[in-house]
Length: 398
Image (cartoon, rainbow, N blue to C red):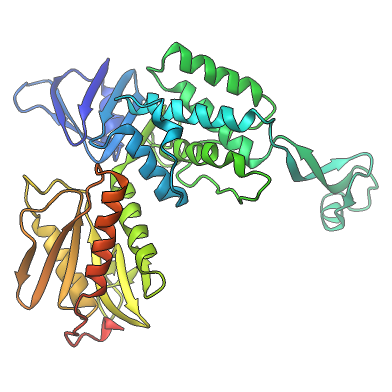
């Protein structure tokens, strides 16, 4: 059974198996509940995640508002802070996010491997019956006290089983598990799998390891960036903490939006001010109530502006009272007369006045071309830089 939804949309009158209901109820990507208009049937709603997942025989597809090729550009910029070359995905562009990212990944991976599979030195530890490399005396004494053999040794192996290739192998394997890919894409993925047959595939993880780039491995960078994106957003957990068995590629647009806006503001102000992103803090002087504002701008030790990034639809639904209360708390914590809320679409008003605090409302639209989006982020950074830093008497402003 396949269910297709738009981002933030819902579908009702569904007959769902108990196993699927149980797993979807645990997921952060969907909400599921009884359909009030159809007794005995269910309603499923997409949240801020977009992509594809398969759970208990159910195939779920959530279409992003942002065009797939532009979403890949956003993912690359937010994960690795590189300016993505649009030509790497232009030929693979379609309305299907998975087909687009699979085509882009294959194009960059094939180009990287055309010059041969990258090799490098990996430090290995082993117990051998002949000395190779150097003897690890501490391990030898701990594991084999008084025995001459086997010998605990440490040596450097020149191999293809290195991080760069492990990322490519892991991303290719994950894509092969996803439903709906064309025969052509599947054939190319299997060819990639064969090329990297002696490489240990990296498993999906919310934090795939970064690569240290040098002139020797730079040709792998576009492919490795896409591989890390695939592995990061292929780690959706349906079964409980630590499980990545359900085939999925689900992008949390809230996280992408926070990364794009936060890092963009930091880059715009880096030479002038200190920009803290999602730094833990406390609302009260006794440090009993934790807070984590998305953006705090400081001049020296003094906070001069604070902003929170909200991936919400406000043009029709309006500004929620929860957002306003959170902004007021941040303004109080840092002794400011103003706090800024940033949304992915134009809010219905430019500001709200709540007592002596101004809640400024701004927009950074992700579906804009990169030049316009970057201009919006620079304008937001300038606005935050110029924000009044008048204190309200709170000692927490330091």
